[in-house]
View 1 (cartoon, rainbow, N blue to C red):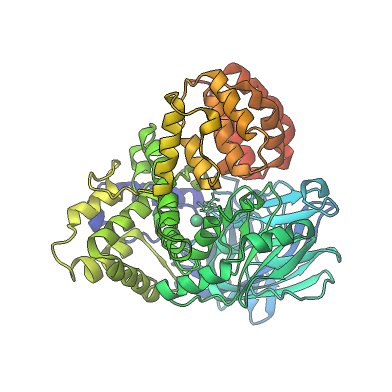
View 2: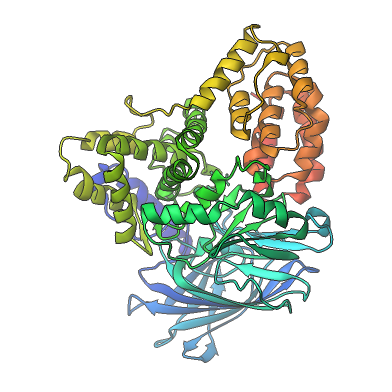
Length: 623
Ligand code: BES
Ligand code: ZN
């Protein structure tokens, strides 16, 4: 029955797509959730959880306070995936009684709908449940996988639709609710959440959290490990393992400044503190904007602050994403495109114009690559159709960089002062709301285009959003620092500059990255050997430089990088860094065999999402 209603909503969606975009009715359901917020809506979530490292299980209770939006509604449907449901009670203000419930068969993408009978007058449910060791939103690390090697570690990753693998809930960004939690852990370990954390809390294995602002389910997060805290500024700080904390605090010392500058540009920070949690290297993403507590990969600690744009990005999500949220995953660019635009603005404010331009240029290059590769035309637009597909598998840089290019275009047309003010106003007017693409387009029509007639046409806006190709008058970024890299690379390739003469002394990680990203194939092996020799590239300890060099080297069939790649792929699980290496290896028979051998052993150390991603690359037959 639930499958049918889901099918209908998918069919409904695709029927709508035949209408011109502005005539689409508002979508009432999220195709990636079984929940129906027009019947019941979660208003508060209360968790009481025990973290059991020996069994790799979280068990406990989830209590949901609900609003019966439709007075005739009798069945509450929640999202779950691989949860063991032990008991379900329904009731009102503390008076609970067991109620009837049923768990539907598992859908590969969506999991299992949990249908609960709601007696008249009931406004809450309490579910006793346990997770499974293979929960898609959890990664359990052995001590060997941590920096300090002594204690196990657990972290969650709920975006996009993994919260349901560790909490039964309405797992859709259409619904937002405050939450509170009590978490029991081994005594030696500290638990932190995307909530109010008390840095000096006593370590006793019993921790309490409160997130007073209403947030979507994908932002609920928990980490447990042997971690410490160090303050950066009055509102900012880092959590990390002991051996990492010093370097992390130094690398991210500008975080407070970023926060202050962002508030000046885009309005007040609504979340109290902004802290960072540095995770072990198997964390599958660069960063995750869990409110009040960004989760981040250690691979951005480069020693020269050259990768801190990631902090700017996750911080910017405190406005675009966490405050104003895409209501469904099709509208992901409202989160990521806005955030990417804000990132570039923040980098410019804090580190100067060329730093911003460098970040923009790297992003624009990646976007050109993506758009040039074959793929669904609609995936190249800002309005992809993800119904029936796994939202994780369709994360490309299109919503990020095309979104940011669009906003940069508007900024160029309306002027920076006007456009910054417009963005700020968009956030103010939609704070703590979940919004659709059409909401933004209507708002922009009214508050920007109509107030400055004749500057940007409706047709141009439609081209940016719905056309698979980019408008011809896109504004491409130019960086002086990168122009110098281009000159060096071209001179070297043409044989005019020897390796010894290459002027790279002042190059940042970003400049090296750009050097490799634009390196062609078919380079002479001796030239590559000389380059490698001169700059110890294969032995670099910088994970971003390493990833880009390995990719360029493999594309040139330069085999001396193989042993280093072996170690790299066993140590690091950040998808952005390992994906291009696996892809490049998969191109040749030898490379693929080599990659398969590594993956067979490295796999257990990867996050479930990363495991799936790599498996897919290695299964797909070579072209
Ligand atoms: N929210 C994303 C991470 C994400 C996206 C998780 C989709 C699950 C599904 C985060 O803000 C992000 O964009 N991270 C990027 C880094 C950023 C600097 C481009 C990443 O992890 O690579
Ligand atoms: Zn992001």
